[in-house]
Length: 174
Image 1 (cartoon, rainbow, N blue to C red):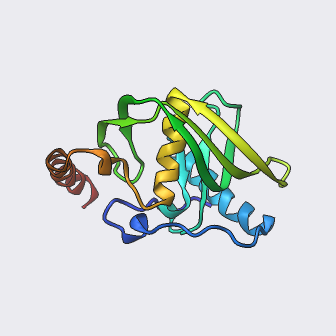
Image 2 (cartoon, one colour):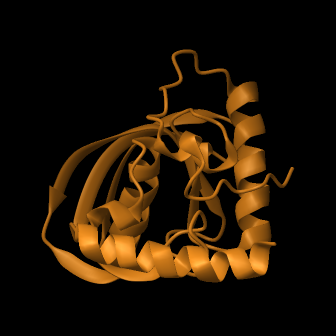
Image 3 (cartoon, rainbow, N blue to C red):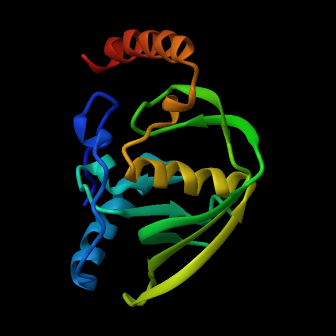
């Protein structure tokens, strides 16, 4: 089911998501379906649980857009194990629609997670990604830690960009 995406001032976006202590495939699949439906309806590269109000460590990635498959991939309880390199690229977020900024992140990431496979089974995986895919994975994992991409900006620049964004966003959301 398509859920509303939480916008920057919603406190749920700043909460650190809890790990799934019990891996119930039925519960995980239900949340995953909502994430996939919402991401599919909105467009975008990824969506984390707290962006739809679920404060659990789960996110979905549009693997087709990242050339990592032809479907959506769902990851549960991700833990970053290694990062390397530095890359600065433009980034945006569905929780701050229309705002883009150049953000510096690692250019390579390895993380461990449990992946919900298309057949409904859960499988332990180790994911290695670089460049654009690394950025997307790190962006979603940041969401699970209550971090938004704008947090990486210099404080003055962040304040200016968000003030301009709020002014524009409020014009269209009234």
